[in-house]
Image (tube, rainbow, N blue to C red; front, side, top):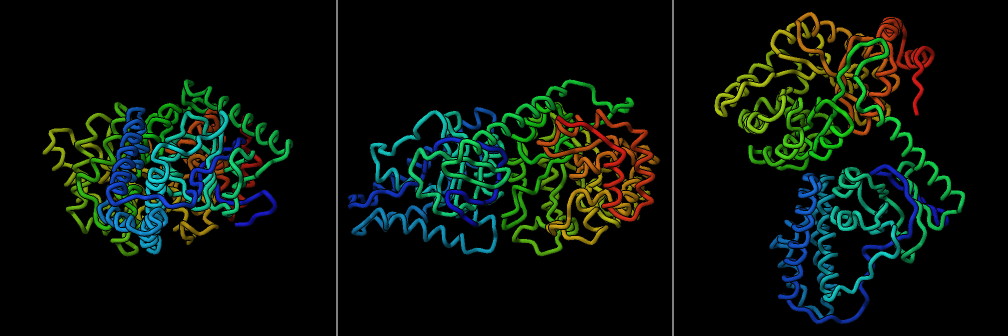
Length: 555
């Protein structure tokens, strides 16, 4: 990353901006001989494990089960016998603190060297535990200075989830890290609590004295030390405007979900955690149109068992009690393939492992008693793929004494669209995954930077979406839901409405904005727009047409 004077550029992994004095969490331990033995090291690890367990329990009591689960990972690491034994052996060195630090770093380096990004993130968790242990050994009486002032920005080489949770409500307004990415545990927690976080910053930021004025703009991915009065004013004004904008959008949460010409619409959320469910319901979502069940297992070395699924689904479904919830089966495909599978993986791999499929379905059916449950099969390419899923769903329903939930298909392949009439005869509902469908139609990899959301406006993609809507309606199925990002994009949303889509499931952060747009769109006008768009030559031409004809004033 680049650095000019006191300005650095990194990666904003949790949105927002803040200005406050800095406080470095991992300030180096002062040099000097500290006499410690193996017993003291073991006790320090045990104390850190207990501390993290208590932090996790506090989060759970506050309804943040996902954050609690993440913090508990640190507690498990602190209790790892191999890590503890390695550190205990280092205690006999002439300089025990550096030796213990090196033992922890060696353990983390092994994980860091592995090609799997998720395991690299686990290495960061190991370093966080090691840092806490060293601080306990160096400052047995709690000698670290607390952050000064009522507000502060936390700085560290690696930031762990517990670092953020420890200071929530205690003045923490932002965070900056040298290492870490968007999928790190700290980033997940930061996004869930609305805390701006920038990672990938030059290590020289660590040399700043505590209480240095620091501007953190995660939306721009920048960090500025000793910002000018103009920059501070600009950031504070932008933050105030964003707060006002969100307030105006949120003010419509209690209003009817109908378009400008009186067409009702459904607004759901794409979720993967209980935190997202709670935020979605607070934002006025009807329920969840897509529960992503695979995200918690992307680093797994085997198929998840029934207990694994129960552990991840229980808090999410409990938070969604009484609401409609569509749970998608494991979608290990494209950019979401765990180490134990080989590309292309996907639905064929899941169907080829009936024990794994049964384990997930049993957990879903049993835990889904309190919600309006639907089960969705991802990446379907043939109607024949639905039958084995339905058979297992029916068997699980008998076992647990509950009605069999509807079984549907996520239409996100050209093959599924090609066979859509037959597919609609064997499912209870269909949804459209616009991201994968667009990528396949336009022959783009999902991680290709050219694979933008607005490409779903391409006439070839729109024609397939229109075909799926028509087939679903003809078969008498419930209104289908578009679950991809196209459901919230200002260019594609009017086109979907024009294609006959009356239900979308969007990212939690987009719920208020999507409602605002839908309430101001005229479905009849959008139908004409959609028909005219099909005659154009590309996504760019369609986007220009939408901009010319559709005007929705946003706050």
